[in-house]
Length: 94
Image 1 (cartoon, helix red, strand yellow):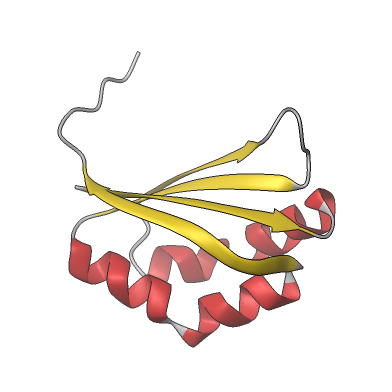
Image 2 (image 1 turned 90 degrees about the horizontal axis):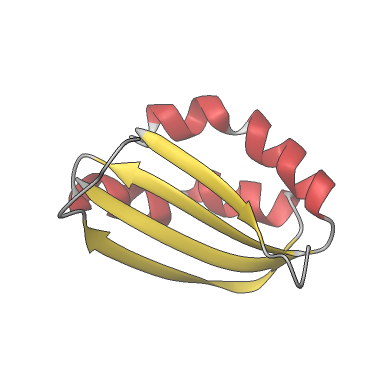
C-alpha cells in the first residue's frame, strides 16, 4: 500500500472542506482507498491530507489528474502543496 501526505495552506478551511467532501466520489474513482484530513492546531488554514492507494502508479495518476488540480483551485488552495509519498510498511488499527 502507498500513503501520501499533502500539506497546503487554504483561503478558508470550511470552504476547502466543502469542496473536498464534494470531490469524494472522484477520489474513490481515481483510486483513493483511505483518507484522513488534519487541520494544523497553530494555523487552522493549514491542512494536511493523508490518502492511501493500492500502488504508486495509481497515486501518481491521481496527483497528475486535471480533476484534482481543478478541485484544489476551486477549494482555495494557496500555492503549490508539499507532497510526500511512501510505502506503508506497517499499519496498526486500534
